[in-house]
Image 1: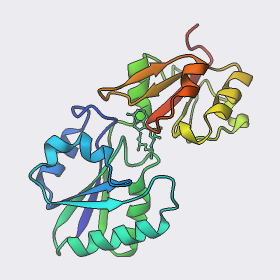
Image 2 (image 1 turned 45 degrees about the horizontal axis):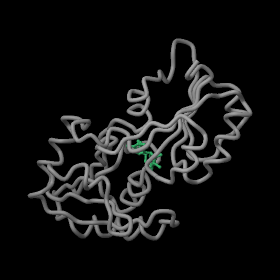
Image 3 (image 1 turned 90 degrees about the horizontal axis):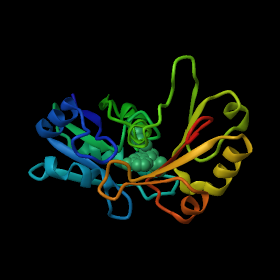
Image 4 (image 1 turned 180 degrees about the vertical axis):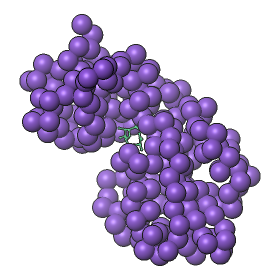
Length: 221
Ligand SMILES: C[S@@+](CC[C@H](N)C(=O)[O-])C[C@H]1O[C@@H](n2cnc3c(N)ncnc32)[C@H](O)[C@@H]1O
């Protein structure tokens, strides 16, 4: 039966990939790579591992409603794989966290193509390590969201991480400040051009989509 593995390739450092993810990439018949306007960060992170593989690029333009693209991509996957062949789909961080693979998986299941997710190191756990900020201590709660903070939830947690910061960065910082949360901005975490920013002005000036904000009641105290 045809099968597609979603491989979490981690946040950027090519050594932050699991042994299982690496083995499946090396052994698969086809590597499917998500692209936005012809660019693929996932493809770049894994470039050393996929040089000699059969590559198929799937376009998912950033910011677009990709419903049609997920359907198209699932058709390409089904038509590319012969019976009993299997492929991998590279995904940034972990496939179960705000990833394209989740939508592709739903479309593939309609086509009776088997799917499996291989966990990866998510951007927010990697960023917590780089910034040396614990996400949770004993008895604490954590809130993960993508751009819009629900203030009722925020009031109940100790720590928050916001992905996709470019959607509403000023609003995010206002909400955090109003609720007495300190924050850190981590950009291109574990990649060559990683930056960790602490001040409101610096954070607002930066426009990189590959960035996140960690907020906490105790940060920088
Ligand atoms: C479509 S989501 C993918 C999340 C991914 N599946 C994960 O587990 O981290 C894209 C968002 O992930 C975050 N992200 C991914 N890699 C990152 C990195 N190396 N540094 C900072 N943020 C990153 C950014 O917030 C970006 O806007």
